[in-house]
Length: 269
Image (cartoon, rainbow, N blue to C red; front, top):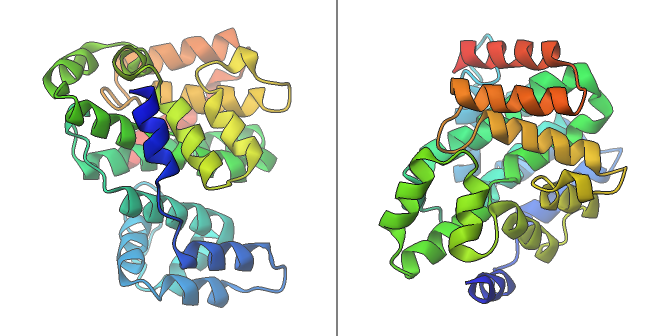
């Protein structure tokens, strides 16, 4: 199956024109909120999805967000770019998560929760790392889309889903069935699309952070902790949170800021 996934990644279509326009605006210091909003407004589906996210309880805005300019102003250009990038990719890959026992909407919600938890937590830990971590936490589960597709093609949906339901580490089940975990697959996808190399490395090492270089290791650990607390089969369960806390303690990271972020997320979830 590794070869099939590799071939599928090679055949992925290019990212939409709006993605490249958005990046150009983001990296231009003279660009404004209005410039970014105008690019997003070219795609009615992106507009609808961005407003849906902005008005969800995950980000806790106290008033209804009625247009794209409002959303970009409140999120900021970096967070907006990350959210719209995630939406564009999920639209392009045609999500079907039946082997994981969840709907596309539930999959999107868990990705959103991971990024919301990362934002609340790392704002207190190291804000300088937050831009990359927010995007990486939104995208790190993308590999599951291709894995689910391969499982269906090989008529192993029932067996895979049965293993996923009660497993402690979803990555172990993925590797057992397809020879790779979803972090490996996601890293290959974003390498193919020429995303930032540091982000690709962080996602690739989120299951093997001890093998990461000193620069990448903190990012990889943070990604692993967030997806351990919010796994696709048991988000925010007692077991999942205990496993995440165990990782925090093992890495000698502050647990109080993490638990505070979890409680805020629970209030909105």
